[in-house]
Image (tube, rainbow, N blue to C red; front, top):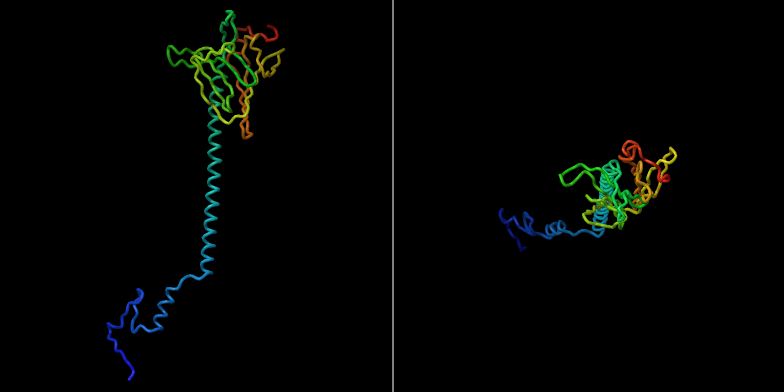
Length: 245
């Protein structure tokens, strides 16, 4: 007689591999269980890797674009900040530039204004902030190590005497390739621009000052400001040409 096994209602439930199987666990049922837990095929793995690579490439390209945009915006904001600083300094100093003389070692009165093509020394009227501060400040603009340096002092900055007592320096702009100054003068009722002011035989200051700043990235900017103490009334009607002195 063939072997027969009788299953009750509760015996029909078998747990095999985490799946509940009703009835006897036969080979066909075991095959069903193993088919549900089969591994990925080689084609499926290749497709998954390809999809993942495409997603990573898209994300990487987007991140690179965001980084490039952020870098350009940061550089642009830095340049705008430098433009604003230079504009404020030139407005304060050039527009308020006044004639000022000081005695040299031979007790001869000489103008402290000194204008070359690559640097400028001047005196300008300043708002009085303290009783001991006075209303005149002195400034020297020059280029050092690709930085535009502003040297301030309450005492005259004399081009014939390199005395650095009381001078405070400030970096106005960085990454500068060259800086050039031009000075407006009146000769024979005409305005001429000079790249070197005759400081030895000239008690006047320029009618206007133009400065051109060129950065290392190839960009450039110009500022033109008229001085305060160069007119007829500011010089007490005694303004004469440098070639007449």
